Length: 301
Ligand SMILES: Nc1nc2c(ncn2[C@@H]2O[C@H](COP(=O)(O)OP(=O)(O)OP(=O)(O)O)[C@@H](O)[C@H]2O)c(=O)[nH]1
Ligand SMILES: [Mg+2]
Image (cartoon, rainbow, N blue to C red):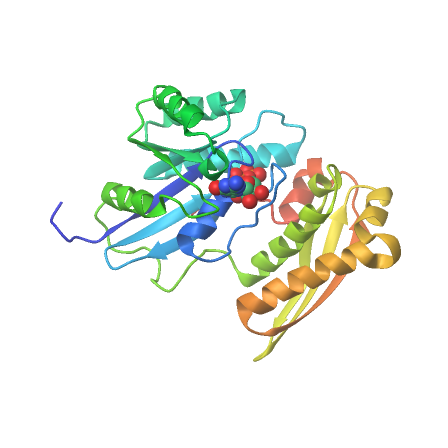
């Protein structure tokens, strides 16, 4: 490859739930694109985050965390989105948590191995490992699990070691002109991002069960010069979940709505009016047609 030639390619962020894939995508692009939370299985789609520099265009592909328990069609949809990404990208960033290696990490590695793509192992959340004496043997141990192109300890949250990562990625991408406009940062619309922002606030504010049984549908998205009107429906599985999402005298719904509105106003630099309704559609998580109509259809890039 000639010196100075422009490079461009797809980089898949793959790993079990909750290891920090979406946090890293947002960090690399320098903008909030993909939602994050402390709960596993936050991301449900593959989402592109695009970073263009003078020498390269890095197209990061965030994916749902690969998990074993496939309770319903939604879980299968999520795993499929991650698995097809493994096949489609030029380079895989396999992300794990510095705290521990689990059986789910083994499963992810099995899929990655079969793809025969170059793989960089990212050991994330090293900011939490105060004790270097245990981190170093862990790094050594996981490094031996596969012929990784590189093993890089990082902190996606604090930004540690990400310049090193960017250099390694750039060097591994194929010579190619940019695929996306250099100004573009994602393939997703503001409409999609609005739905996700609302889902994130609900996910963060709710307990263990309800976040997994709700989805957000934008019914109306009308943008004017300085103003955006958004009407959204929060679909849940059961009546009692509706009451939980709404909260005492509507307090929980109001709180989530305010947080999402503020975030969207900051992103768009426009005033946002957000109207939310909660409705019940039982069985939507396991029904092909419902899933499709709610935006969970297989997508390609
Ligand atoms: N301490 C620490 N926490 C992190 C770091 N990166 C991510 N987190 C936290 O880990 C949690 C999960 O992060 P996400 O980015 O949502 O993880 P994910 O891999 O996208 O999860 P799924 O979408 O569920 O697969 C969040 O609470 C993040 O703030 C890190 O470098 N250090
Ligand atoms: Mg995620």
